[in-house]
Image (cartoon, rainbow, N blue to C red; front, side, top):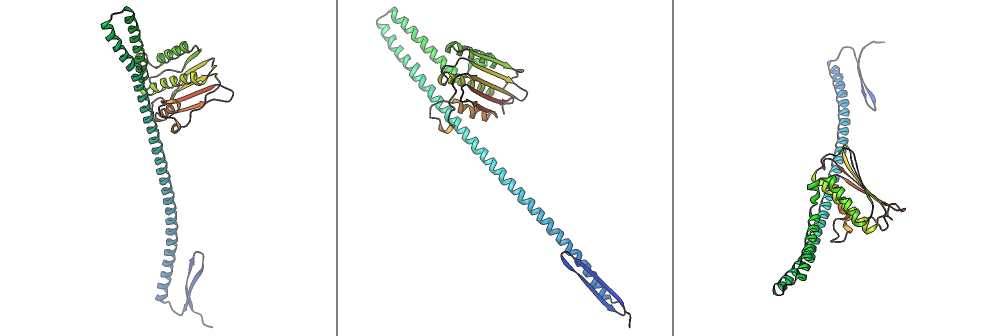
Amino acid sequence: MHRYRCQGCRLNRESIDPLVLLRILPVRDARFNLLASEAVMLRRELAERVRYQRRLQSLLRERDMLLADLRSTAQARTRAERDRDAVLAQLYRAHHAERERLARELHDEAGQQLAWLKLRLDRLRREPSPEEIGAMLKQVDAISASLRQVVRELRPVALTELGLILALSGLVREWSDRCGIPIEFQLSGITVPLTPETEVTIFRLVQEALTNVVKHAPGVRHVSVTLQYARADVTLAIEDDGPGLKIEPAPDARRAGSGFGLAGMRERLTLLGGQLMIESPPGGGTTILARLPMTGD
């Protein structure tokens, strides 16, 4: 029996049977040493390649997730812009319809009365009459009242002269005296200055809600208006004990020339960062709840 020196190398590869290089020589062979070194380097390269592929797959998955998030964000932005454009279009149409209504009132009320007044003045110049003068003075008073009403609808002067709280107090008191319905105005929290847009929106919403009480709540016996100031927002609640309010249709379903209405007020609140909720249970009564941020953004 002869004994020889043995040189070898074992190459472990993942998920592959190990490779064993073995050579028996009576003396050391430099070529075998080189082959063994190359086998070890190959093993390292294969392991590094596997790690690289796994890392690349992970990066590809992350890229796909980012692309999906970007697409979702882009779609959400597109929807938000489309909704914003729709709201702006609705407000423009409602504003245009309101201007047309005021123009008709000026033409039908003040315009016709002024034309009739001119005819009476011309007749009075030919045939003086104290009775005619008295009738003309009454007609002038009617024209003045009509113009004041149009001015009030265009801009609530009371807001500029008195501020929101006193303007609302005067509004609800005047409405109660005119309609004969008891109304309670409550103020909660510490009052702070609001933006002009927010004040006008609150004032108009109270006007619209009280108008709806007269139109759609026969037999109502009591109405309450509550304005609550909080740290981050201001809340307006209008409640009545009538038979219930028929909720307005969607903005697209409003007929032309119907004015802003509660649906238009909802759009206006949305543009200011607020929201409007209307509750009218089958048992009767209606609650209109509006919430607006303090900043008016």
